Amino acid sequence: MYKAVIIGGSAGSFQVITRILHSLPPTFPLPVLLSLHRLKHVRSGFVEALSIKSGIPVLEPADKDQIKPGRAYLAPANYHMFIELGNKIALSTEEPVNHSRPSIDLSFVTAAQVYRDKLVGIILSGANRDGAYGLKKVKDLGGLTIVQDPLECQVKTMTEASMKLTKVDHVYSTNEIIKFLQSIK
Amino acid sequence: MNVTDQDLQYFISALKNYTKYDFSDYSDKSLKRRVEKVLADRNLDVAGLITSVKNSQDFAETIVKEITVNTTELFRDPQTWHLLRSRILPRFKNNKNINIWHAGCSTGQEVYSMMILLHEMELFDKAKIFATDLNSDVLEAAKKGQYKYRFNIGYLDNFDKVIKQNPLNYEEFNDVPYEKYFEIDKAKDTITMKKFLTEKPIFRKHDLVKDGNLFFAKFDLILCRNVIIYFNYNLQNKVFELFHSNLYPKGCLLLGMHETILGPWATKFEKIGQAYVKK
Image (cartoon, rainbow over all chains, first blue to last red):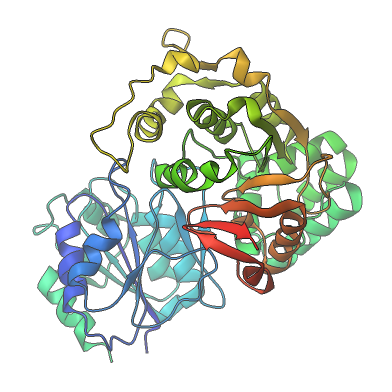
């Protein structure tokens, strides 16, 4: 019933993302869109690091790439990643939004507009408020919203900001997020 | 302010009818977002925007500048500059001239990065640098070669990575001082390129949608980075044709890190790393 999963994360989310990707079967039926902040000087090597343990291929997409199920698409460093109608990636070098490029909000808002009630939006650990507005849009357009339990987050600013703005559907631990994703058929 | 597909079409038609700009083949989504931002910043609705565009060329010009994207950095994506340094520019070292076109140069950081690299490689004197953009304001800034220190300090790292270090040999370190190429004035918050750099390039206003090659020259290297992401497939192909026909055989086209040639023009180039070499 779902068509895509989008995950936003920042400080403290790397381990969580790694565990989530590791847990996904190669037959995972949906694309996984990853909008993650990274340190300015650690711009390369991220996709490789995520790939090592991932159950599905992790790619840094090119502009206008077709989105396919069973793959994870990591927003390239220093670009915004948007989702376009027709299941395509669009990249942009527009100004950072809230000091962030990629902007989690922009990825989430455009994904919500494309997938509407067929989208699962997940916000993980992070040290700023990016993603809160995006998750609200996912909810407003009928999608399912999940945040990592702030008690478990290395930095809980992002998840708390999201919960403040939106009545999220689920507050899950990493294990519960994994269980939920594995249950998607 | 939400802009519908129809609003966007009205706006594009108004620009087409009342100005020399045609945005029909720009990528919808990003254009829509830019227009939404213009409306929000100016507290206008689409009808109001269209009326103002019809009534004033100056206003229309300003709007065009605002809906196009002008972000750029010194040595953006160091891997790309390593590729230029190790595998692309050496191909031209025996040329009499090296003609380089920066298409969509914005405020010029890429142009200065290129000239600095050429200078370090002792190819500066052979190079002829042409740089174009749609937006006359950014061209003026590019000509001036002066930037805010605080907005560019983060990119000096990139200078170190590309100019001082050699990724193929970690033991090599060239201590090239910034002052060789630009003056940093922290009190005035400026980075100012040296005169021998600012006076070299030829800057011209150019619209990739409708203008051909403005220079009486063909090119060894064309850089058009993070420009075609704002274009649709049709316009991308048109631009690839323009570049292909104005490159020398074995000339190189360099797109942004995450831009690729899709469609018929892909077969007319071979790839060296991310660079496209005309067959």
